[in-house]
Amino acid sequence: MVLLKTKFTFQKRVKLAQTLWLLSWVSVLVGCLTFGLGIFLKVQLWIHNEVMDNTVAHAVPNTVITAGLLGILLGLFASKSSQDSLDMAKYPRWKSFMLPYFFFSILSCLLCFTALFLSIVMRGSLEESLKVGLKNGIRFYKDTDTPGRCYQKRTMDTLQMDFQCCGNNHYKDWFEVQWISNRYLDFSSKEVKDRIKSNVDGKYLMDSVPFSCCNPSSPRPCIQNQITNNSAHYSYSYQTDELNIWVRGCREALLSYYTGIMATNGAAVTLFFLLQASVLVSMRFLQTSMDKITGVEDVETDSEGFLLEKGVVETISSNLEKTKALFKSSTGETGGGGEAACASSS
Image 1: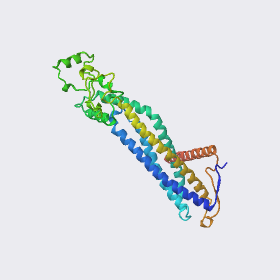
Image 2: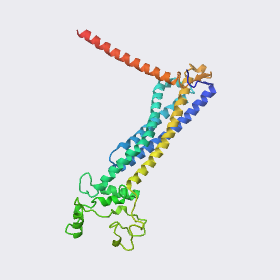
Image 3: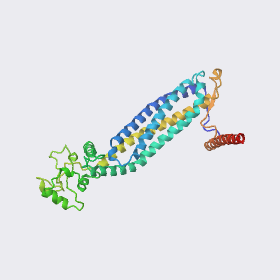
């Protein structure tokens, strides 16, 4: 059974070709937007790669970039072929490219769907990657002389200032690690000795945070040392006063930032998917209606177009059978050649 069979007059075919040309160029523009957003997300993930445990999240921008680039090329093809469909002297040269075009169009739509799916499911992986990466960033903050870790201090300070955050989950994460290198500690000082002895692991722990956690908008000079000690600061109450350091964790800040970018990518990919599907269906109707026209003298005659020559299930079954037959024929030819070679050798 023919699926969505429609009769096309000459005027209707012209309108279809013009509409397809317009849709194709809109698809190209949205494809450029999608490609650009994918590049932007890729760059942003790369910038903060040092505070991520893995690169699994890069699958999202990679898919968006591929879908956008492929969609741009398909849109250019569709715009040119639809324009040439009005001229029977030019259109026949496009017929041999239609089957590859439909294959890559379906692939582009699948890539768009995959990008949307990954944008949703990758949020958990991204959060876990940030959790481990930020934890390591805080732990290696003091290792400015260690190869491979010497940039962690700069990375964490820049991150906390740019995103107005502190620590991994909250600022108290800095209380649990020694973030000051031993080279900057006076081990002859009683205070230093007492702090190290009071800790089971022999680390210099304190209720302090790096300068990058300070909130510059606070009217009071930043209290970054002895945060929980009310007596160490004049007119200060740790429990009731509003702290003049950032209290939001960097994992929450980064996750919110990347979720927003992925949501924008998702909206662009959804629009791109709808345009790609519209161009694909329009091109199919134009192709099937133009196949009935054999020459210039028949250009103004009525013709019929359809989406599928058979039903969906029948079309899939038919294509599978053709694929199997093609595979068997190629295998049979290879086997025959081998037998011939054996015969000649004997």
